[in-house]
Each structure stands twice: as structure tokens, then as C-alpha cells.
Image 1 (cartoon, one colour):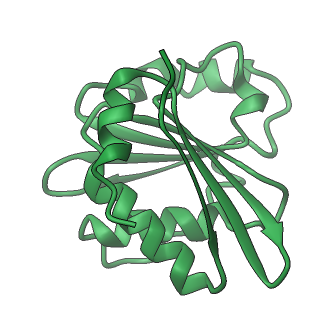
Image 2 (cartoon, one colour):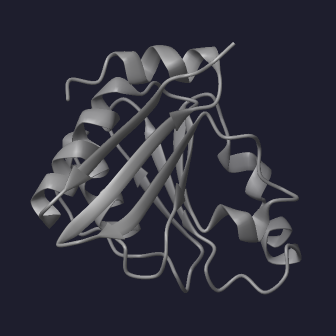
Amino acid sequence: MSYTIIKTTCTTEQDLQQLAGKLARAVRAGTVIFLHGPLGAGKTTFSRGFLAALGHNGKVKSPTYTLLEQYQLPNMTINHFDLYRLIDEEELEQIGIRDYFSPGAVCLIEWPEKGAGLLPTPDIQCEIDFANEGRAITLAACNERANEMLANLDL
């Protein structure tokens, strides 16, 4: 079976945040999203737009040094991971990584390849890359559940 792949471009930071907001409104609790892309491509900006669309009004900082920022929202918890500085997978064991993948949470994971041995299979892969004046975005469903979520995106 083939799954949905969406390719689009965003020319501004606001466009990227709006796209993330559309995805946020389509996902359900229990979703795992891997955020791929080079340093500075906009993974944290994407996460800001995602959280804002779900009602978060505060700051969204990159969890580069803390590995995790957790946001309690009215309908779900968002766990935002940044594994860029991860040296050893043991660090993930120490923070109890498996406990964050609960049915009531959405997990956004930047640099997921650094924790590949301990992370679950994602529902959605999001690739953000530099493209001319903006960003090229690819959203790929990894299962039927995610296929349904991406089908509901209003692009």
C-alpha cells in the first residue's frame, strides 16, 4: 500500500508556521512526527506554528540543551524533542523517553536519527530543506492512520 506524500514550499516563516498549524489541526493524540532537515532549516519554527495552532500562547524555545520541552494543552500534551546534541542514547534512557510516547500526547522530534534505537516508528515524516528563497517541505505518512490525517490537510 502506498501512503500520502505532500510536497510544498513556504516562502516565509509565517507560511511555514501556517503549514504547521494545518498539520496540528489534522493530527490526533498519540501521533509521532519526525522533523528532519539541516541546521537552521526551520524545524523549531515549524514546532512554534504547530503549538500556536493548538492554543499555546507562550514562548516555544528549542529544546536543544534540555532535549525536551513539554507543553500541557487543554486537549493533549505536546512533547517537543531536539536530539541534535545527543551524544549517547543512554541520555534518552535517563529521561525515561518511552514514557513520553503516550496515547494522549503528540511528539515532535527534531534530529530523530540521533535516537533511532530508542524511538518508535513515526506516524509522519516531515522534511524541511532550504529551497531558493524559502523552504521545501515534504510530509509523508508512514501508516494508514497518518494517511487519514494528511488527507484532511487543507492546503
